[in-house]
Image 1 (cartoon, rainbow, N blue to C red):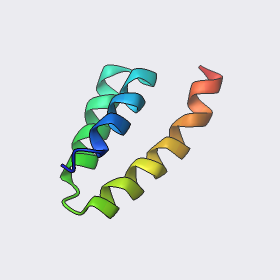
Image 2: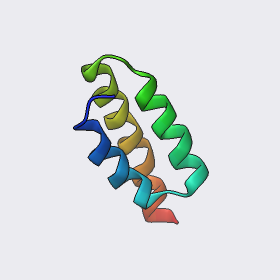
Image 3: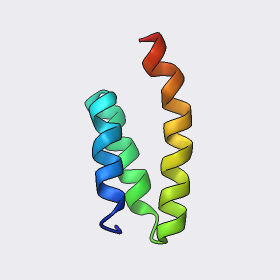
Image 4: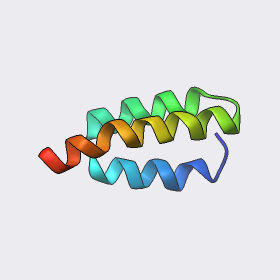
Length: 55
């Protein structure tokens, strides 16, 4: 995966449980294109934010 995607994943992983984090990481790392990976990450961030505030 593109190196600069990793800090983003780490940030995300700190906010969710391990299983969710693994799935996210796998999914994002599966994107070979940098843009695709970043787009996916943004989507996941959007999806997760509401969950974080209700948790």
